[in-house]
Length: 455
Image (cartoon, rainbow, N blue to C red; front, top):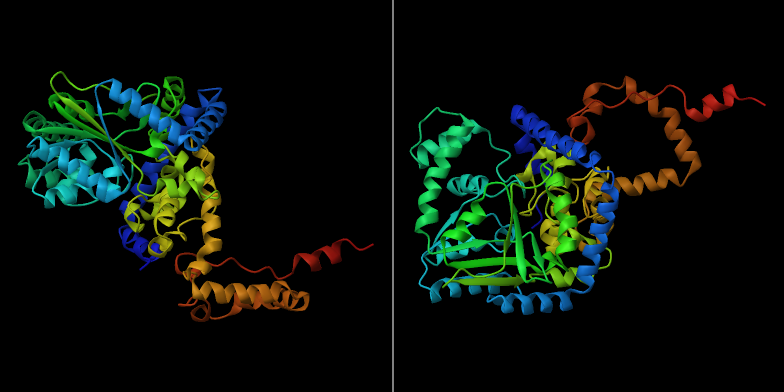
């Protein structure tokens, strides 16, 4: 059953101080993105080039996937294909069991969140450790990410300090970020050294070289993959790009759009197994090829998961990631959720002001806001249109199509200004729940025009 974003957002907004902090923090990241983009004269040209490269890649997927596999195998790697989440999880389980691996260290992967990998492996008896700092914090809390790049952005350091004191035995009441980071590093060091396998997702899969590129700021992906001889890298088919020249376009856009940095601290290429070890690549569909068959929404596959649309979205910033029922929040999450299952995730479609700021900042020019508008037109066909809004729309249609009703309504509208507040601000007035209604002018524009522009 679809969950209403508005109802979930109310819980987030109950803590006004945190809501304000969340809004301001993400807007700060958006401002950093703007400064970075303005330092590159060819920024818009890069965006157009990235868009075209993505559209080329998705329209030549079969050829590029075959090229990637051919080159990856030539590099000594194993290549697997997963049609859906079940196959993805089963392949990873088999690789681990074939090597008698009990403990797996993972870097951040939204694909693994999409396919519920951690829960699957833990249920099968494996020890799974998230090594990205934000993801590790959330794992210790038994919580999910609220942002695709900054997964724990909704948490303040005081909450992290209390968590580490409970789970890691750190000094209670010490809220210093450097101290907390060192505590996490100290605990994770043992996990890196004692794990049986390392796993990461992928930002880009380069067909021409048969390697996967991972962009991080913490180096945890490198540690996890370097300390173990059994390495697993999984990515969706939408991450395939043609060559290294194409990669250079995306790496100039990714970090600047995501966190306002010129480049991520680490840009790592995984293409060959360690000596005496194994490198496994898993190429996952899980509904992506179905998106290719929907022309109105095909450009969603352009997404490089930078999170810029979330950082700029006025609704996401003020309602938080947990207000969305899909595991990816914000504008891109609204679209991906509807592509996954419109019956389950239609409650998110209202979480958009149609300001199109998301479309404006997207580094690969996904028409995010425009697609959300298209989804809204489809809601009635899914049986998910809001009954109250449908009734209001019919009433407005009747008024707008009748000049007599329209001008009569305008004439009597100022009466609202003198009505008792209880009659105006009640359960039927959703707008008035969080703000004041504007005052109606005592004179319509038409009347003013006739009075001041007599021939």
